[in-house]
Amino acid sequence: MENNLLSLSTLDKEDFDYLLTRALELKQRHKQNISDLPLAGKTIGLIFEKPSTRTRVSFEVAASQLGGSSIFISSRETQMSRDEPIKDTARVLSGYLDCLVIRTYAQEIIEEFNNFSTIPVINALTDLYHPCQVLSDLMTVVEYKNRYKGLKIAWVGDGNNVANSWVNTAGILDLNLVLACPENYQPDPEIMKNALAAGKGKIKIVTDPGEAVESADVIYTDVWASMGQEEQLEKRKKLFKPFQLNSKLVSMAAKDAIIMHCLPAHRGEEISDKVMEGEQSVIWDQSENKLHMHKAILETFL
Ligand code: CP
Ligand code: NVA
Image 1: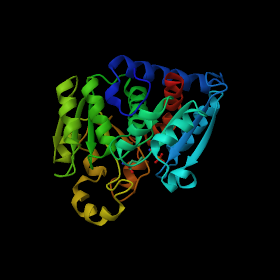
Image 2: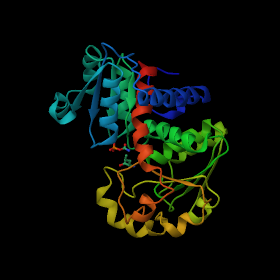
Image 3: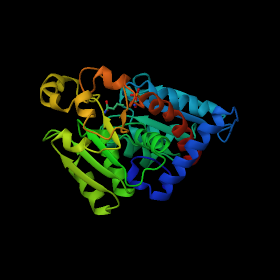
Image 4: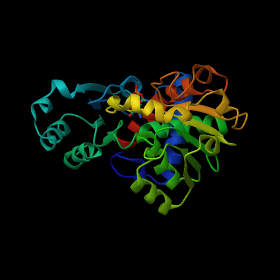
């Protein structure tokens, strides 16, 4: 395992299995009020250039529950906003902190931080990837289905950062990933090519959401316009309409299919209120599991 988590493509099956097992174990221990303090005396820094509710709060709580502390660094309030270079900021912060958790735009920004940091750098979302999200999602899949091997995962909607991280995952684990996305809104072609070449799981892109959800074990959707794409929303709303996760689409899947969404959701756009609140939705456990997986990630990478 590398000393950073910039994308899931640097993990192997053993790394995934280790993190999944440890996150499930940490969740059980937390429910039993057993403390684990591997981060005692350690401080993690969170640099967020985009908004966040779940990822920010769960990483901060994760650090605190593991005996460490966290500092939230809004880039607007640092010298980064006055063009201090990333390579200088990364070296300075490495002298104070034990880990950097970063949410930003271009993947190149987090790579630059990593190149000049001497501490682990964790990707808390970029335009290209959302690795921590998919790790915790996989934990939820294992909780509900007792395995991930061979499961059919249907992605419905935009081939965005979360979708790209699912594609990475299906290159490494034995999954059957079918992504239904409008043309021109499909996962990154380079990421697809590499995952297909790695060849562990099956990965297919289709344009018919019905084909993706048919006999799926897991159905996943996400917003139609990600952070930074807000001005495209009106155009996307028209194009993505047939990709709404509603009761009709869900009825085409297996009866025990679970419904997932990384949140925040826009009810009435990518998902209907009925499906979000319905019996097959595991969305609230999914969001809770970010805490437990982030604890496993911090413990492992620190
Ligand atoms: N799912 C997720 O990353 O949510 P936040 O944007 O609230 O962190
Ligand atoms: N694809 C979404 C995920 C939010 C957690 C975005 O990037 O805005």
